[in-house]
Image: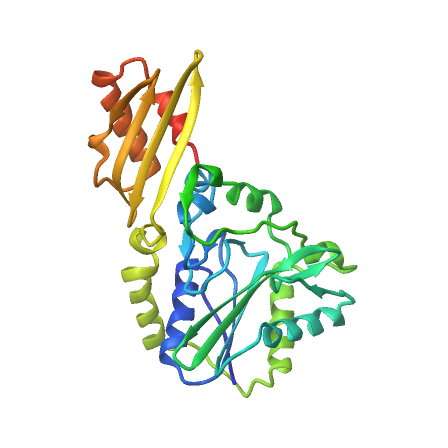
Length: 317
């Protein structure tokens, strides 16, 4: 087995790196990386529903779709990501048990939940997901050491109830940072180094591999052409219907939008009992701010009782 410590904190790069290593390298691999603040959604999820789009847009937090299934997770530099790529089938225990043993050295006892999460005092510190490619399996896990709990909860607090779809839904769990379980506080960097060195020993790593210019170039191309694209991160979401209602001055206003491949197929607005076909939105990408502006302009001629603030409320998700 070889070990790779990613030199990059860019979430697009590291998600693309997992894809590259799985598809292009033949060795068994231990990969450890940290990402700057980001929201990472599972491959089969509705990205629009899984994150608070208004908050992450205002906070300039990227949303990235990974290649594995499962639910949405929050990354920042206080979170460590651990990936194992091996030939053949793997069990989640192959990934979780070494992490448990390392944490036990720090006098932290963990348990494994039915969702293959690691828990401390019934609170989640680790989530896992997997992806199979040909005869190889990729398993990866998050490890919350000193993540921003405030930004985590704000980022993942989307309006899921407004979305009707068949995508995989996240199942939120109470979380805890490992830093709150230790008697001695490491910096984020010190703890990441500790986990890196301990896991290399646990997996019997024979060689530390440093990404070369070719590796980085290919990964950067993957970032440019796929992993940073709106088509992958958002439009890849399963088809869905967005429905939201508000009351203004005692009048019911309801917006319904049907979306496929990230673009609007049909949209209707009900205002004070009258239904409007919003053909102006047909084929438009389902992008929050653009929709608000388009509908605000449309309403000036077609429904002047509605203001910009009305559409901001209807499209708050």
